[in-house]
Length: 195
Image (cartoon, rainbow, N blue to C red; front, side, top):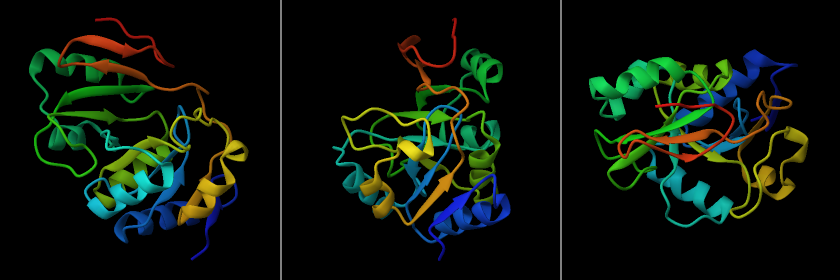
């Protein structure tokens, strides 16, 4: 299996390789609208543990990336009074915390962080496979987020099964984190948000 793909050079090949990685329990590095991420199938416990090991991360929950609002509703409780925020701000540079509908290995606990990025490639990977993607930054825990493929840690790339080069990210900043359960902004990031 080819390990590196460029979206500019071989979009179709990158899409096929990322889809196969999701189905086969592999770990891959991918671009989003905000930062580079590392992940795989969020429903596969072994993939989750491998991502934790590669990043040197503790047991904190991961967020998930989904393709669209329909997939978001599959995994999250979306009360009518909260849905308007999702429709207004997604797709976009936001991570929304919602109550979970079912157990997901990537997200222990009652809440789940969910993203629908403003990046068509990673949304298509999720949509084509019908699976949520582990959404965590492609860095060693404690180090800064990465906004360009060339700045990725070489050791991290070596440990992943696949790496997708999407150039520089659109926003070059982390996502804004909004807790729609507690109704508060937890992190100001790339997107402006108002309740």
